[in-house]
Length: 446
Image (cartoon, rainbow, N blue to C red; front, side, top):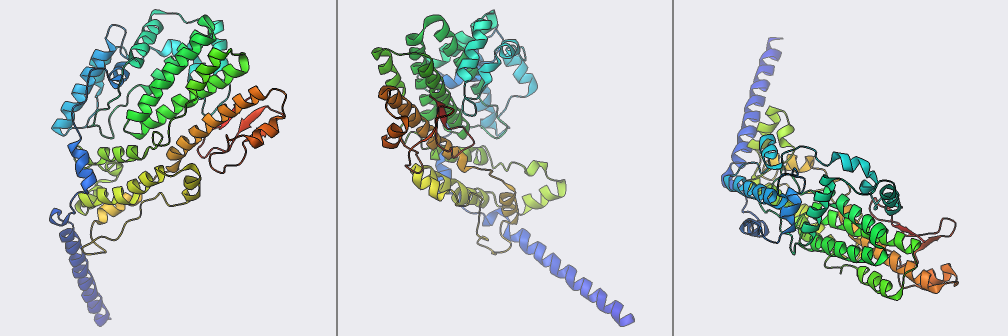
């Protein structure tokens, strides 16, 4: 019995020594001296973080759009951008706290009343058919009115007249986004109101201006939110146009306007790969940020931080996740469709020194980051291209008159973007469609 106790003590002591050696080796292996050099692409991103242009910039107006009626939206936007940039330069969290938000914007929810009155302005045309008709019905029942809504529509038109979109480069994960949703609601109201008050031609003129704005955002927006908002805006315009074509018989001049609106963005304009790279700025600048880590228990945060190599972690994120998505974004729709079973989760090597101990905290953080259906962001751009084809096919069917719809569809060059098969035709419900890659409804009513 005595021998057993002594043996147990020795084993325990040896175990503690071994554990201590492992802990020491782990901590030594993860001192900053052994961190990697930041990837050259990420170094260049830091060099690109410059003050934003405040003149003729739609982003400035979008940031100040919800300001109280006694404020100038663009002035509020400029102050907000200046405050963001100052915080970025100081290495602070780049956001407005409650007091700063109150000082800049004033009244908290000045748009709640009209937003409730015109609920169809929130109808998501990417997920639902008939949004335009719903909004027209609401406006027929309750025409646009009120000083606040009139002011907001004026602000909306001022924003749309800007010729560029430059986002603040020093944002982080806590930063407030521009008021995209509010702008989109105003856009829908303007389109529907123009149709009711001024007719089809003026509606098409407005639709072209709004299409140009969303294409500007698609082209110059440098993060995923901006790109996806632009896709949603263009999608909404297509569905509104599809409903118009079902409601009205257009003259030749109006049909020329429709054809101009249906000039789809080119593939390189729909390549959102650079937006994935842009998201890296949130990780790297200012300072390394690892979202979700702050929610862990104190001991876990300490252990992770003590064994996390910052450069190595963001390098692994970039090379194992961001770069593959950038490459996937350049694929054609059929190529993208074939390759979407590829892994979108991060897979990293064990590291450089020593293989099993180096950057344990970084690997742990990388494994905790989830990317649900991340390929859907790319898929939405291919879906949008398909929606342009659906509208073109609808025009073909309108021009074909009494010809067999199925024959026209089978012979049309406007086909499923992923498979090149003929578009689906539901004669009973009078719908054209193809199966979306993303969680959307890729169909138009005939």
